[in-house]
Image 1 (cartoon, rainbow, N blue to C red):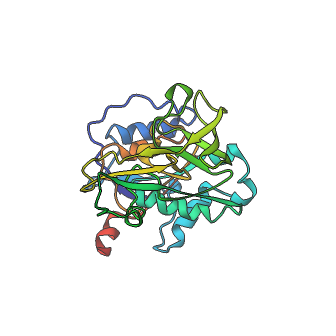
Image 2 (image 1 turned 90 degrees about the vertical axis):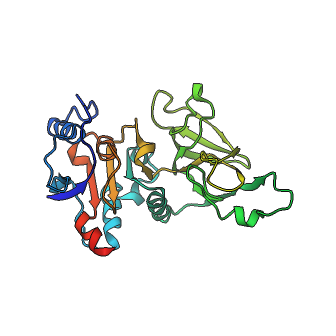
Image 3 (image 1 turned 180 degrees about the vertical axis):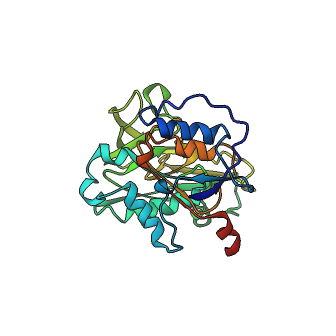
Amino acid sequence: MSYLWDSMRHQKLVRNMRAKSDPWFAEYLLRVGGGSKEATVDDEIRLPHDICVLHTREDSDLDTLIDCIFPNLNANMSSKDYITSRAILSMRNEWVDMINMKMIAHFHRDEMVYHSFDCAVDDPHNYYPEEFLNTLTPNGLPPHVLKLKIGYPVILLRNIDPANGLCNGTRFIIQGFQKNTIDAEIVLGQHAGKQGFLPRIPLCPSDDEMFPFQFKRKQFPIWLSFAMTVNKAQGQTIPNIGVYLPEPVFSHGQLYVALSRATTRSNIRILAMPAAEKDVNK
Protein backbone atom coordinates (compact mmCIF):
# COMPACT_ATOMS: atom_id res chain seq x y z
CA MET A 1 0.00 0.00 0.00
CA SER A 2 1.04 3.62 -0.54
CA TYR A 3 0.39 6.51 1.78
CA LEU A 4 -0.78 10.05 1.17
CA TRP A 5 -1.67 12.90 3.49
CA ASP A 6 -4.99 14.66 3.19
CA SER A 7 -7.17 16.65 5.57
CA MET A 8 -10.51 15.12 4.56
CA ARG A 9 -12.21 14.86 7.94
CA HIS A 10 -15.87 15.74 8.54
CA GLN A 11 -16.86 15.96 4.86
CA LYS A 12 -20.26 14.33 4.28
CA LEU A 13 -20.81 12.50 0.98
CA VAL A 14 -23.58 10.14 -0.03
CA ARG A 15 -22.99 8.85 -3.57
CA ASN A 16 -20.57 9.22 -6.45
CA MET A 17 -22.50 8.93 -9.71
CA ARG A 18 -19.43 8.85 -11.98
CA ALA A 19 -18.21 5.59 -10.46
CA LYS A 20 -21.56 3.82 -10.21
CA SER A 21 -20.39 1.16 -12.71
CA ASP A 22 -17.57 0.20 -10.30
CA PRO A 23 -19.15 -0.43 -6.87
CA TRP A 24 -15.79 -0.97 -5.12
CA PHE A 25 -14.37 2.29 -6.43
CA ALA A 26 -17.57 4.19 -5.63
CA GLU A 27 -17.44 2.93 -2.04
CA TYR A 28 -13.73 3.72 -1.75
CA LEU A 29 -14.36 7.30 -2.89
CA LEU A 30 -17.10 7.69 -0.29
CA ARG A 31 -14.75 6.49 2.45
CA VAL A 32 -12.03 8.90 1.33
CA GLY A 33 -14.38 11.84 0.87
CA GLY A 34 -16.30 11.15 4.05
CA GLY A 35 -13.19 10.86 6.20
CA SER A 36 -13.87 7.23 7.11
CA LYS A 37 -11.02 5.72 5.04
CA GLU A 38 -8.56 4.03 7.37
CA ALA A 39 -5.49 6.14 8.04
CA THR A 40 -2.21 5.88 9.91
CA VAL A 41 -1.52 7.68 13.18
CA ASP A 42 -0.06 10.54 11.11
CA ASP A 43 -3.39 10.95 9.30
CA GLU A 44 -2.06 9.45 6.08
CA ILE A 45 -4.55 7.72 3.80
CA ARG A 46 -3.66 4.33 2.35
CA LEU A 47 -3.83 4.15 -1.44
CA PRO A 48 -4.47 0.76 -3.09
CA HIS A 49 -1.25 -0.56 -4.58
CA ASP A 50 -2.82 -1.34 -7.96
CA ILE A 51 -3.70 2.30 -8.71
CA CYS A 52 -0.22 3.58 -7.87
CA VAL A 53 2.69 4.05 -10.24
CA LEU A 54 5.85 2.63 -8.69
CA HIS A 55 7.92 5.48 -7.28
CA THR A 56 11.59 4.73 -8.02
CA ARG A 57 12.97 8.22 -7.29
CA GLU A 58 13.92 8.53 -10.97
CA ASP A 59 12.92 11.35 -13.33
CA SER A 60 11.39 8.69 -15.57
CA ASP A 61 8.61 8.07 -13.01
CA LEU A 62 6.58 10.92 -14.48
CA ASP A 63 7.11 9.54 -17.99
CA THR A 64 5.73 6.23 -16.72
CA LEU A 65 2.61 7.99 -15.44
CA ILE A 66 2.19 9.79 -18.78
CA ASP A 67 2.50 6.48 -20.66
CA CYS A 68 -0.15 4.92 -18.39
CA ILE A 69 -2.67 7.69 -19.08
CA PHE A 70 -1.71 8.40 -22.72
CA PRO A 71 -0.72 4.96 -24.08
CA ASN A 72 0.24 4.77 -27.76
CA LEU A 73 -0.03 8.54 -28.05
CA ASN A 74 1.67 8.75 -31.45
CA ALA A 75 -0.93 6.44 -32.98
CA ASN A 76 -3.88 8.19 -31.34
CA MET A 77 -3.00 11.88 -31.29
CA SER A 78 -5.45 12.56 -34.13
CA SER A 79 -8.34 10.99 -32.21
CA LYS A 80 -10.49 13.60 -30.49
CA ASP A 81 -12.13 10.98 -28.27
CA TYR A 82 -8.75 9.64 -27.17
CA ILE A 83 -7.31 13.08 -26.31
CA THR A 84 -10.33 14.37 -24.42
CA SER A 85 -10.99 11.21 -22.40
CA ARG A 86 -7.79 11.49 -20.36
CA ALA A 87 -5.83 14.03 -18.32
CA ILE A 88 -3.27 14.26 -15.53
CA LEU A 89 -4.22 16.26 -12.45
CA SER A 90 -1.94 17.93 -9.96
CA MET A 91 -2.19 20.54 -7.21
CA ARG A 92 0.11 23.34 -8.34
CA ASN A 93 0.27 25.36 -11.55
CA GLU A 94 4.01 24.84 -11.89
CA TRP A 95 3.61 21.04 -11.84
CA VAL A 96 0.78 21.24 -14.38
CA ASP A 97 2.84 23.49 -16.67
CA MET A 98 5.79 21.12 -16.47
CA ILE A 99 3.64 18.14 -17.52
CA ASN A 100 2.05 20.10 -20.36
CA MET A 101 5.51 21.04 -21.63
CA LYS A 102 6.46 17.36 -21.66
CA MET A 103 3.35 16.53 -23.66
CA ILE A 104 4.10 19.18 -26.31
CA ALA A 105 7.20 17.26 -27.35
CA HIS A 106 5.05 14.25 -28.32
CA PHE A 107 3.10 16.14 -31.01
CA HIS A 108 5.10 16.22 -34.25
CA ARG A 109 3.06 18.82 -36.09
CA ASP A 110 3.47 22.40 -37.26
CA GLU A 111 3.38 24.80 -34.36
CA MET A 112 1.61 28.15 -34.11
CA VAL A 113 3.07 30.72 -31.74
CA TYR A 114 1.08 33.66 -30.37
CA HIS A 115 2.84 36.41 -28.40
CA SER A 116 0.87 38.49 -25.93
CA PHE A 117 0.77 42.28 -25.70
CA ASP A 118 1.60 43.28 -22.12
CA CYS A 119 1.41 46.60 -20.34
CA ALA A 120 1.37 48.18 -16.90
CA VAL A 121 -1.68 50.43 -16.61
CA ASP A 122 -0.93 54.07 -15.71
CA ASP A 123 2.83 53.77 -16.08
CA PRO A 124 3.73 57.02 -17.95
CA HIS A 125 7.40 56.82 -16.93
CA ASN A 126 7.77 53.24 -18.23
CA TYR A 127 8.99 51.87 -14.92
CA TYR A 128 7.83 48.43 -16.06
CA PRO A 129 9.00 47.90 -19.67
CA GLU A 130 7.21 45.38 -21.85
CA GLU A 131 10.27 43.11 -21.96
CA PHE A 132 9.99 42.71 -18.18
CA LEU A 133 6.22 42.19 -18.26
CA ASN A 134 6.65 39.45 -20.87
CA THR A 135 8.55 37.37 -18.30
CA LEU A 136 5.58 37.30 -15.89
CA THR A 137 2.94 34.58 -15.86
CA PRO A 138 0.49 35.24 -13.02
CA ASN A 139 -1.75 32.41 -11.88
CA GLY A 140 -4.83 32.17 -14.05
CA LEU A 141 -3.27 33.87 -17.08
CA PRO A 142 -1.84 32.28 -20.23
CA PRO A 143 1.89 32.72 -20.88
CA HIS A 144 3.39 35.49 -22.99
CA VAL A 145 4.44 32.89 -25.57
CA LEU A 146 1.52 30.58 -26.33
CA LYS A 147 2.60 27.58 -28.42
CA LEU A 148 -0.20 25.52 -29.95
CA LYS A 149 -0.72 22.74 -32.48
CA ILE A 150 -3.75 21.28 -34.23
CA GLY A 151 -5.32 18.63 -32.03
CA TYR A 152 -4.16 20.09 -28.71
CA PRO A 153 -6.66 19.99 -25.85
CA VAL A 154 -7.00 23.39 -24.19
CA ILE A 155 -9.06 24.82 -21.35
CA LEU A 156 -10.73 28.21 -21.26
CA LEU A 157 -9.51 30.52 -18.46
CA ARG A 158 -12.32 33.09 -18.57
CA ASN A 159 -16.07 33.35 -19.12
CA ILE A 160 -16.53 34.71 -22.66
CA ASP A 161 -20.02 33.63 -23.75
CA PRO A 162 -21.61 31.30 -21.14
CA ALA A 163 -24.86 30.98 -23.09
CA ASN A 164 -22.94 29.32 -25.91
CA GLY A 165 -20.69 27.20 -23.71
CA LEU A 166 -17.66 29.51 -23.61
CA CYS A 167 -17.20 29.31 -19.84
CA ASN A 168 -14.21 29.24 -17.52
CA GLY A 169 -13.15 25.58 -17.42
CA THR A 170 -14.57 24.55 -20.81
CA ARG A 171 -12.29 22.16 -22.69
CA PHE A 172 -11.67 22.45 -26.44
CA ILE A 173 -9.74 20.75 -29.20
CA ILE A 174 -7.75 23.12 -31.43
CA GLN A 175 -9.00 22.93 -35.04
CA GLY A 176 -7.26 25.83 -36.80
CA PHE A 177 -5.53 29.18 -36.49
CA GLN A 178 -6.26 32.72 -37.63
CA LYS A 179 -4.33 35.91 -36.91
CA ASN A 180 -6.53 37.01 -34.01
CA THR A 181 -8.79 34.01 -33.46
CA ILE A 182 -8.41 30.28 -32.88
CA ASP A 183 -10.80 27.71 -34.34
CA ALA A 184 -11.81 25.25 -31.64
CA GLU A 185 -14.42 22.61 -30.82
CA ILE A 186 -16.04 22.13 -27.43
CA VAL A 187 -15.53 18.54 -26.31
CA LEU A 188 -17.57 18.10 -23.12
CA GLY A 189 -20.94 19.08 -21.71
CA GLN A 190 -24.20 20.09 -23.37
CA HIS A 191 -22.34 22.13 -26.00
CA ALA A 192 -20.00 19.28 -27.00
CA GLY A 193 -19.30 19.26 -30.73
CA LYS A 194 -20.03 22.95 -31.14
CA GLN A 195 -17.33 24.78 -33.09
CA GLY A 196 -16.45 28.42 -32.74
CA PHE A 197 -13.78 31.06 -32.62
CA LEU A 198 -11.80 31.94 -29.50
CA PRO A 199 -10.76 35.62 -29.48
CA ARG A 200 -7.66 37.30 -28.12
CA ILE A 201 -8.83 39.49 -25.20
CA PRO A 202 -7.37 41.73 -22.46
CA LEU A 203 -6.73 39.81 -19.23
CA CYS A 204 -5.81 40.90 -15.71
CA PRO A 205 -4.71 38.74 -12.74
CA SER A 206 -7.55 37.83 -10.38
CA ASP A 207 -5.41 39.02 -7.47
CA ASP A 208 -5.15 42.82 -7.76
CA GLU A 209 -2.40 42.90 -5.13
CA MET A 210 -0.11 40.45 -6.90
CA PHE A 211 2.05 43.28 -8.28
CA PRO A 212 2.65 46.92 -7.23
CA PHE A 213 1.02 47.93 -10.53
CA GLN A 214 -1.99 46.92 -12.59
CA PHE A 215 -0.91 44.25 -15.04
CA LYS A 216 -2.77 43.70 -18.30
CA ARG A 217 -2.09 41.00 -20.88
CA LYS A 218 -3.83 40.69 -24.25
CA GLN A 219 -3.73 37.04 -25.19
CA PHE A 220 -5.98 34.08 -25.96
CA PRO A 221 -7.56 33.05 -22.61
CA ILE A 222 -6.60 29.40 -22.92
CA TRP A 223 -3.93 27.00 -21.76
CA LEU A 224 -3.11 23.38 -22.46
CA SER A 225 -5.17 20.73 -20.67
CA PHE A 226 -3.18 17.53 -21.07
CA ALA A 227 -2.64 18.31 -17.40
CA MET A 228 -4.83 20.48 -15.19
CA THR A 229 -5.02 21.58 -11.60
CA VAL A 230 -7.50 19.68 -9.47
CA ASN A 231 -9.49 22.89 -9.02
CA LYS A 232 -9.88 23.33 -12.80
CA ALA A 233 -11.07 19.73 -13.14
CA GLN A 234 -13.94 20.11 -10.68
CA GLY A 235 -17.28 19.22 -12.23
CA GLN A 236 -15.72 17.32 -15.13
CA THR A 237 -15.90 13.60 -15.87
CA ILE A 238 -12.64 12.36 -17.39
CA PRO A 239 -12.63 8.56 -17.80
CA ASN A 240 -8.82 8.11 -17.61
CA ILE A 241 -7.13 10.09 -14.85
CA GLY A 242 -3.54 10.34 -13.69
CA VAL A 243 -2.71 12.13 -10.45
CA TYR A 244 0.76 13.58 -9.95
CA LEU A 245 1.60 14.29 -6.29
CA PRO A 246 5.28 15.09 -5.68
CA GLU A 247 4.21 16.49 -2.30
CA PRO A 248 1.53 15.36 0.18
CA VAL A 249 -1.99 16.70 -0.25
CA PHE A 250 -3.03 19.05 2.53
CA SER A 251 -5.96 21.02 1.08
CA HIS A 252 -9.37 19.89 2.28
CA GLY A 253 -11.14 17.72 -0.24
CA GLN A 254 -8.54 17.87 -3.03
CA LEU A 255 -7.69 14.18 -2.93
CA TYR A 256 -11.35 13.21 -3.20
CA VAL A 257 -11.93 15.66 -6.07
CA ALA A 258 -8.90 14.32 -7.98
CA LEU A 259 -9.85 10.66 -7.56
CA SER A 260 -13.53 11.17 -8.29
CA ARG A 261 -13.00 12.60 -11.79
CA ALA A 262 -12.41 9.01 -12.98
CA THR A 263 -15.16 6.45 -13.52
CA THR A 264 -13.49 3.18 -12.51
CA ARG A 265 -10.61 1.96 -10.40
CA SER A 266 -8.89 0.48 -13.47
CA ASN A 267 -8.69 3.88 -15.20
CA ILE A 268 -6.84 5.86 -12.54
CA ARG A 269 -3.12 5.94 -11.73
CA ILE A 270 -1.36 7.94 -9.02
CA LEU A 271 2.29 8.90 -8.75
CA ALA A 272 2.86 10.04 -5.17
CA MET A 273 6.03 10.69 -3.23
CA PRO A 274 5.65 9.27 0.30
CA ALA A 275 5.55 11.97 2.94
CA ALA A 276 8.38 10.46 4.95
CA GLU A 277 10.65 10.48 1.90
CA LYS A 278 9.73 14.11 1.17
CA ASP A 279 10.78 15.05 4.69
CA VAL A 280 14.14 13.30 4.24
CA ASN A 281 14.81 15.13 0.98
CA LYS A 282 14.23 18.61 2.42
